[in-house]
Figure 1 (cartoon, rainbow, N blue to C red):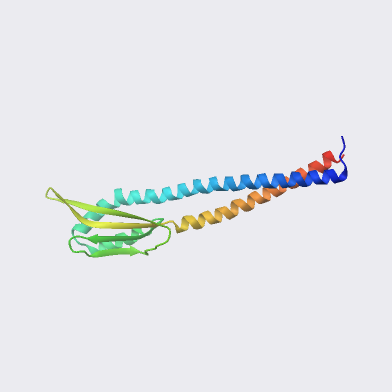
Figure 2: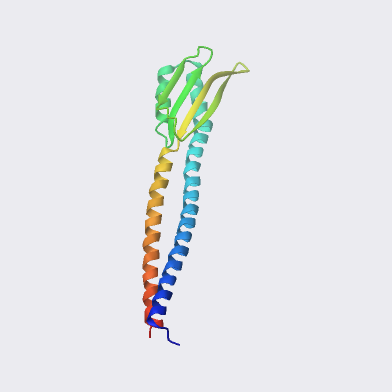
Amino acid sequence: MFLSKKAQENLGVKFTIYILLFSGFLAIFNTGIQLFAEYKVETGHIDSNLTQIKKVQIPALRQQIWHMDVVQLKTQLENFTKIDGINYISIVLFPSQVEVTAGKNSERYTQREQIPIFYTYQGVTQKIADMEVISSYDQIYANLINMVALILVTQFLKTSLVSMFIIYLFYTLVGK
């Protein structure tokens, strides 16, 4: 069964359009899934860093806070801001209301966490400070934007090459 030249061209154009549309839909869907997975991994790293600060670092800070060692406390907080995703840390000491800060306070794409710090002295537990940790998602979003561009470009190239190959096969096999 042979098709006329005009019918072959129309059929080839329709194949190409349908393949490009379907592949484009799949590329966008796949990109969304990959971005969501990457977002979860990256935010998980920040959450794990916050958990590390709460479980490991705060016990070490208690003595410095109790003794009002502001210089050492400032050094420790500056080290915390070097942890991935942690942009700003503030500790308000009680009862003096002295505030010790480190890092840059950003208002964009942040997660804020308030952590009360308690100290037990002679069997009495009391609140000695409030700590605020601000983690930033700026780098995560920048990485995701780069990933979108990379994934969509590679998907477009792959789809274009597959479409050209299908058109070639169509004209070679059906055109005979």
